Image 1 (cartoon, rainbow, N blue to C red):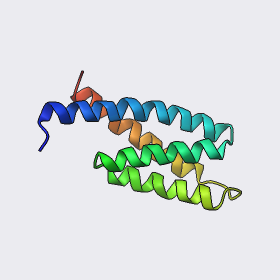
Image 2 (tube, rainbow, N blue to C red):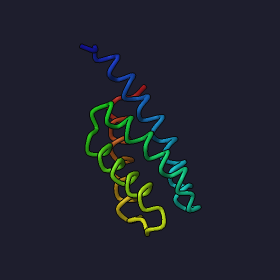
Image 3 (spheres, rainbow, N blue to C red):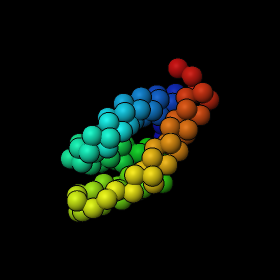
Amino acid sequence: ALDDATVKTIMLQYVTETQNDMATLEVALQENNMSVAADTMHRIAGRSLQTGLTDFGLALRNFEIHLRNEPDEILPTADIQNLLDDMKKWMENYSLANPH
């Protein structure tokens, strides 16, 4: 079992890396760069699933699969943005509750 300090370190690293990837993802979506968007969703989804944030991870994985299988289909951008907003709120709350 991991001690609390190790878990905190892992989760704070998750927040930092995910915030960076989310910025990349938002730019990729705005620029309609679906290859970068799918790759970035894959990284965030995997990281989320590894840290136990399965709701975020599975939702992103579904968007990634949709994007890779139907690249010309219109993306549910409002749904993606809602998910990213929820993730940002979660990370903000986590960071406030667990300062460095």
